[in-house]
Length: 320
Image 1 (cartoon, rainbow, N blue to C red):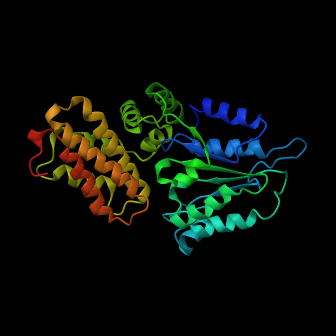
Image 2 (tube, helix red, strand yellow):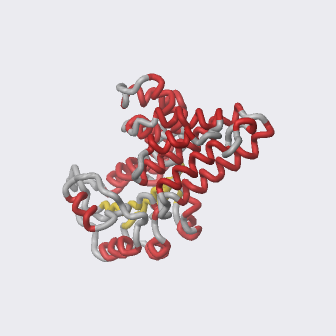
Image 3 (spheres, rainbow, N blue to C red):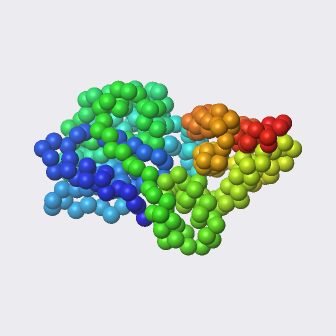
């Protein structure tokens, strides 16, 4: 994916690298899909590179990446084969402790190493507490980069030890240009819907196109405009999402519903504001819980549809 909107982040990073002392912990904060992980990898490679020391093209031994691992042995075997696999819901304390054990040795190639946690929001409580100890007493030459979509979910003590770099959302015009370049096969209507649904996130816009969410987007717009007193539209929405959707598709559906409701606010009469605001707030709550809670997928999809219907104009809201 072509990365846009990173100019200020690179200025901050490179100014710090050129200063007398590079801060040991960084937090890359911003909406999901802005390319923060790609930035983290490129920035880490710049930091560990030293004159006269050849740098590997692929995996770098002095860059450690902590992400959610495979859910179980079956999914681990899929990963080893290079197949798509389901992940655990959290980054575990065991992963943090294994990383800390490696930090007792010297970097492999040079004098610096980087640990990337993506997303740091997904650390379980024990993992957060364990990481905090490393942030408080970082080993010499070790730097931490925490990628986060929701900084408020991190411990205040972790946030206070990091230098924060914020990644802004990008303009609709930039998203349109990106989609024309990266997804030329998508028709104009799909690209337009992707821009509206993405809310300034390039990754979300491309994900929208790749997941073929155009029909779902149009159906959500219909529900919020007309209501769904006979539950027919919500039934069609469940069919489009699928009987056993993966967590990623559920999360995309919640984000899409949030965008649809947020985009409807300009057409809402004052008497309908409370319902729209309440529905949006509930979707925000669900988006925070869905990555880690063990929701029943069918019930969660039904809840999303009901929240959309509850945000319809009052006259259309019968039998929500």
